[in-house]
Length: 121
Image (tube, rainbow, N blue to C red; front, side, top):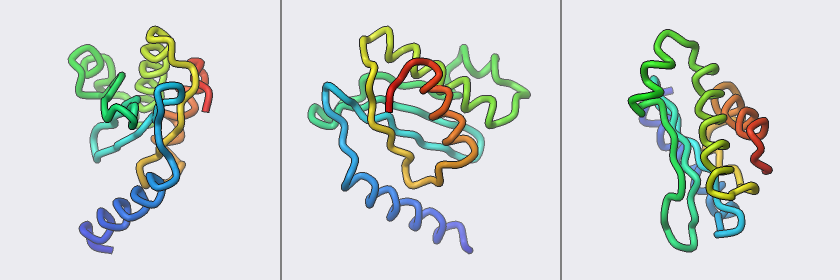
């Protein structure tokens, strides 16, 4: 499968998920994006079209901490970070948006770590 085919397939799947999943002020959307080397998570209020909280492996404090770690372990760390930041802001329940990716590997590790951190979805 060519790279462009994979990308367009993921975008099509993500559009299908987004038709069903929407974040509100009470239950914002936890969306995940993973690139080859990094993983990003955002808590988004779709009614206001704004990002409430974000965490990624590109943050300076995280970058030095995750150097040399496996990608799944890094995803777990980002999941715990997003959960702790959400709890600080008083967000307990979220809707999970896997971004068109399979619920497997890094996406699954992030989601399970966020659940362990106290988020409900």
